[in-house]
Length: 409
Image 1 (cartoon, helix red, strand yellow):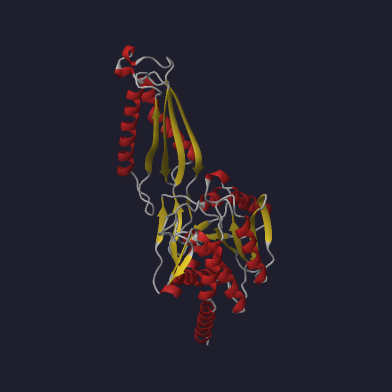
Image 2: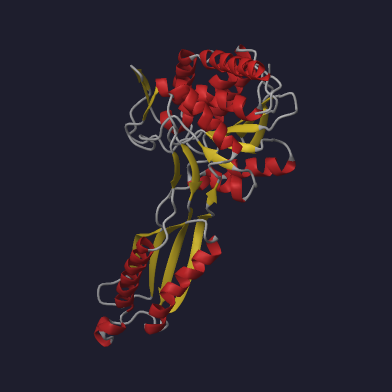
């Protein structure tokens, strides 16, 4: 009798999942994505797209919480209430884009939607709307709450991550909820870990000031010690390559982007400046990595009798959400149902908002998106069929994690 009851429950769940998957309207999502891409929304200029997205949530019957980040710019929050006896999930993503530049204009061509923001990440934001719409259309009742957050201020550094940071504040104050955050960015794989990153600057300053190079042996020229420092950084990367490798993201990385020294062809420089990035795994915090950079540069500064200053900017601590986490497993289950195969579990050297949500908000977070291959490119596009599949995965992930029709998953 118990086996028969269990089989009936499994069949009922299969039917519910199939009905929910079929409730996803791919054409509706394609039209919504097209409309979003047509609205320019470079970071700090998101007002129009915020208004449009809020109207769409209103049309779907959601009470929209418009959280002002700065004048005319809003994080938008909506909640699909559950019965109250299950865990809650937030679907998260950003509405702003990088500058349009020479990107191809918005157009639909076959399975592709072109235009700035199509893959990063207005397509995914349309898919999230499609998932919420399907949950209502299919008459699905979840146990836990399902939240949707559409935020601003993600892309350009001028915004200082004001949208994501405002969301962190709203988590802490209880304005929004969600035991887990699923960000609709990246590839259709489970991106559960990112290295930490910082922009660092190393400054070497000569106490003697600028001097005619004729009167200074080259072995004492501060530029010579810049060369030594670059060689030391090269050796440091070789040490990292030979050291511990994270199973998902590989070895740590240090890079230089700019080297500045001198103001005249026959005058020793007063100050030499090297700026770059360093990416590290969960083994350390940002301040510890900064101390390692100081230790790396200190012997060279001392040898050249140069004053040393090492500083950091735009630092993000690493994060990792275990692959065994129930929300990650719920998305893996949904992916399997939609695609018929296993989703890859990956980590990245690049960082995103999950680094902030985990380390500042204390909310386990991870990514699953429809695509990322053309993000930030002049030929940006997204597959409309993959948007439909992503919406199916988002809806089924909510069913699996929050619980469906009174059954806790």
